[in-house]
Amino acid sequence: MLQHLLSISFDLAVASVAAAVAPFEQKMCFYQVKCDGKSKWDPPSVKTSIGLWDLGAEPKGKLEFSFTCEPFEYKKEAAKLAKEA
Image 1 (cartoon, rainbow, N blue to C red):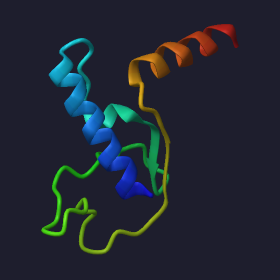
Image 2 (tube, one colour):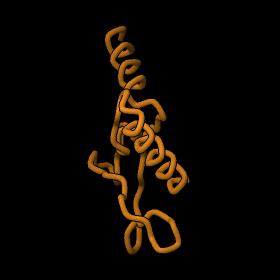
Image 3 (cartoon, helix red, strand yellow):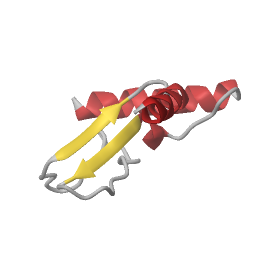
């Protein structure tokens, strides 16, 4: 599943830069990321020779996040909800 989300986010980021309307980085598609309880995680940026994203030698642990295809809209909506709370 993570491989697919990484590919989707990469394609969206590339398309956003090409469109030059609202460019964004791949990692902006991932929100509230926690890796083993720590809030620091950057998506892998290298693919293996068979086309999969390189997750490291032995990826392990728990990765939690929210994913969006519209990072700017997600951020606006999150701010709006926070204001209403």
